[in-house]
Amino acid sequence: MAPAFRARPAPAVGTAAHAAGAPHLTSPARRPSPSRPSSFASVACAALPRLLLALCAAAALPAAHAQDSGSDASVDATEPIDSKEPVPLWEVGLVGIAARQSPYPGADKDIGRVRVLPYALYRGSFVRVDGGGVGLRALKTPRFEWDASGSAAFGSPSNRVPARHDMPSIGTLVEIGPALKINLGDLVGEHRDPRATRLELPLRAVFDVNDGFAHKGWTFEPWLAHTAWTGRTGALVLGGGVLFGDRTLNHLYYGVDAPYATSDRPAYQARAGLVATRVSASYRQRVAPSVRLVWFASAETVRGAANEASPLVRSRQDFGFGVSVVWGIWHSAEEGTR
Image (cartoon, rainbow, N blue to C red; front, side, top):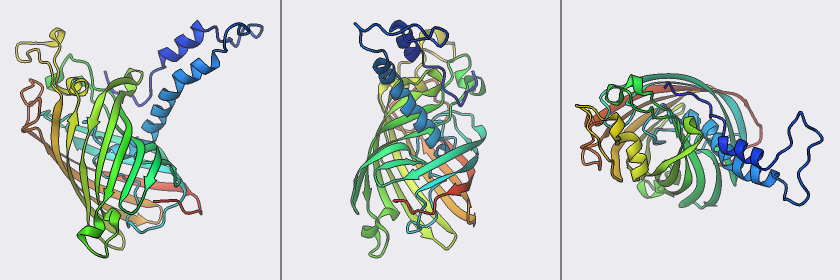
């Protein structure tokens, strides 16, 4: 099943509305019973989580860089070049992504991706809509930042991955949860921006867009990013980290249920633990006032991972590369918060 960049209708919402007797457009005379509470609250409560997740997906996909493994470790293409560069309060535009990467850590076949997506940013001091998704910044000091935000990763159809032939596809995944960010740049160099070196500690719940936003587990990915060089129109960023998943998420990648077992793909129950160790490099380049390029490359290994013995692991290391083109078409004159 090829991945689709749209959420399926949320059946729980429709079912709740129908069961509660929500009015129908063709029956204007029908009204909720005064003896029962209105169904609007129950419908809204059921719809709100899916709406927030959909907003996270729309905001975070430009930052995904076709990272099918579920990581948001690659550099956000919508970030400015210089850490001291003023940023507009809001920005709307298009981002194009071309990449070739592994569909999941341990796969022995790379998948090429080409996507053009709209993006919208809002950089408020508390409410944020940026490459990390839709979030709230609860704490911001020169040393520490804490927020709740999301990220996204493109899916991978099983018919393009030989090891997963006839198995369920991995859908487009959206992650949302809190993240603690520790700014360390001034410890590396006395006159450096503290944000130039940052340790991020995100804990996020994972949802599958192609499966009605069904919950698919949890991730924890400590990540250290360091701006190694900054010029007038470019910046080089290096990073590295480790990705951990709970049993549910790891089974999505590495588990083989009995109906899908074959002679060369025995049944396998995945364990919680380390998924992969990763490093990346990216070069941000401004080619025009409203156009930016991000060239990126990454490498990861599953050596020592919790599910290295899975029959779906066919390679111990993976490499990926690609480029993002960001065109900021409209933006505000008012300055936003970094």
